Image (cartoon, rainbow over all chains, first blue to last red; front, side):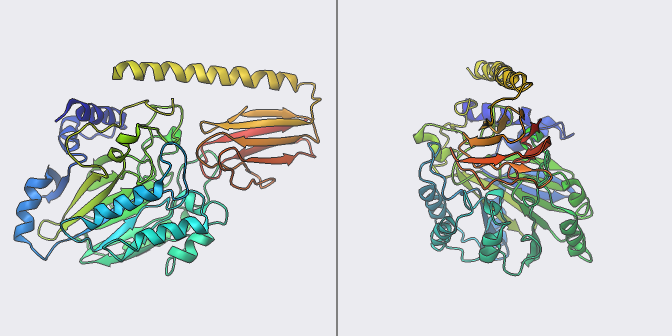
Length: 342
Length: 118
């Protein structure tokens, strides 16, 4: 592994909160960030292994039984500042990358910040680009940028059909239960992301009667674990939401908002944040603010990307694979600290 | 190389904060005897500056967003609510009554500020 990449991983590790996860074990998992991870349930304990090795074997055995979906996030259509003057082009690159996957994903999940300013023209551009994706079914949750001026009316009209409240919903796909949560509405002064009482009640009810062996995938814009409170990178009432999934054997939480990959495993719950398709943001506390991070143009595609999630029926496991938009070779990540924003 | 830049960032933060404090305090002091009817709040690096602004009754406060990311200024008690301010966009509000007005950015609620009207 190139030193640069290892440095980045070490740095991200240091940034994580003290969460009781064994550092050595975690480092082993994190060593595969950006290339791939398979989480396998083994006696209730998630065990990670190299993606290419494990997946190859299981894929052969289970042909046709597994499925995959892709997570993209933070497209910020309408953003045109130096960090990335053409976010539509990088979204298009992400879609090309999805279309080039060896297996066609069953659907796409977009974890919010579709737009920069909730403008109809921005949503139009996003829709137009996504029409070219190989997967036609796309599930959305809003980011704070999608609910800016109209309490999310524009967003809900376009993407919220059949959803509850501010756009939350659940669906089942091939034995996996997916829940899209909204934590960007009605935010309170001084706080972080918020789900709110009504949504929490609905969520608890939604899980009632489901077998503990059902794999659960939660997705929301702002991380459902506290990454960096000073920048609001967390959700005030996420702990309550997570208490409802405690009895389930496999829970995967997919978030966006922070424009970089972070992963954490807590018991049976694995947390994961995705890269943006638009611009990177600094590592927590490594810049005066969470604003867009400027990187040299030739490195931009290394810090933007898509997340490919494979579900293997045999092992009840979810493999989360992040790929940068640029060639995913072993070239440096370009995500050094402090190169922008400071 | 990495260590150094981390150290520099660590040093820069307190310096920036000290500068913000220095910038903030004269306007607060000046407003002990308020005279100017107009005042400004600059939004920079996800911070309202000055965080507490003191103005006379009748003053118009103008917020300007200097970030690459949109922000709002929304009164916690519903007294005023800006539209979304994109980069370099402004919002003004005239304070006709004395009191302390807390506000925040409804997009990034960690950002809070206060206008004290005397």
